[in-house]
Image 1 (cartoon, rainbow, N blue to C red):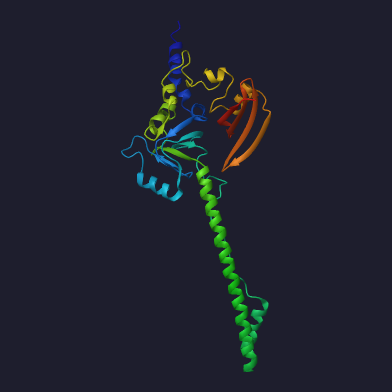
Image 2 (tube, rainbow, N blue to C red):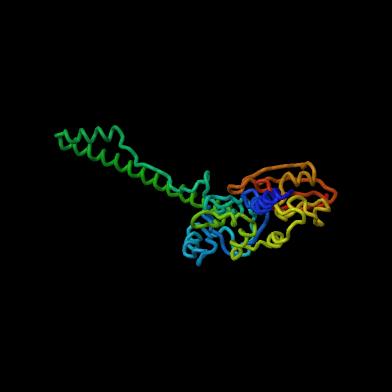
Length: 307
């Protein structure tokens, strides 16, 4: 009598794993978490391209070229915050510490346009008059004045070129510094189209395993939650750790979570570090004063001092 339910149940069960195969699921799993890179990362939004399942997942000559061109923003063994995971048609962006300098709105050009000093009206008039003048003495005086005017114009051009060169060097230094503050990214690329099997935390970690140490995230992905096969197993909010039981924050906590845990901050401030917005909030708790720093709304570091 209930045989008609079988196809519907089978369809529902078959769809359950796909519920976690989406950009929101990947973002929920990774963003705000800290990982450790196993290799140097270039300071550019071009990042490092990874082609999983191919004979050469990493094109080392291209990788080396980006390191040489843009410099190293993260060194092997350094920790980085996962700031964004973005799914595109043929690849997945795995952004670290801001995703790399050079995205829309970032100033990358170091060139300053300049033009030669224009001739004055006096110089133009003299050029016309000297051709008509027949008196050799007057003609010589005109040419001497023309030479003086031309020399002044050339000296002005030289001063301008010097100022432009100095300004361009300052721009280069500024871009280099911003690249060191802008993070980097991995691009997990596929030749044809992005397979649905790639849209899981385990698939992302498998693709990046030679290049990223995911620490506890790998273990959490392999531990299913009883009674729930549609969600990741990471305890997103207020994990049951001694720190949070004592009313202390943890790295990766969202700003809203920190406020809910620690109460209304007694003092807040904001600053820019490269392309990132850093917010500092001070809380008064029974354990002491907690000063927490958030990058784009995610806790990256904190200190506790006794009052």
